[in-house]
Every structure is written in C-alpha cells, then in structure tokens.
Length: 29
Image (cartoon, rainbow, N blue to C red):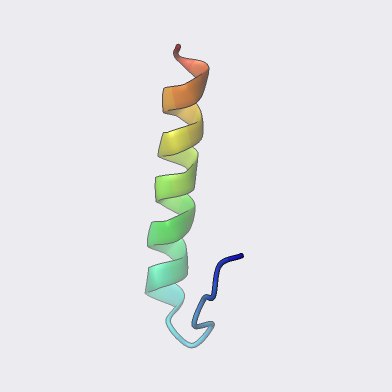
C-alpha cells in the first residue's frame, strides 16, 4: 500500500509516469 502526499501533484505525475514506464517494460518482455 502506497502513501502518497496528495498536496504534491508533481510527485503523483512522476509516480504515474514511472508506473507507465514499468508497465511498458514488463509488456516488452
């Protein structure tokens, strides 16, 4: 379970981008 500070929108954007990159990396295998 992740604890995300909603006040930091930038961190959420970075987290989402990292999540998308991770999914793309997994699907490339």
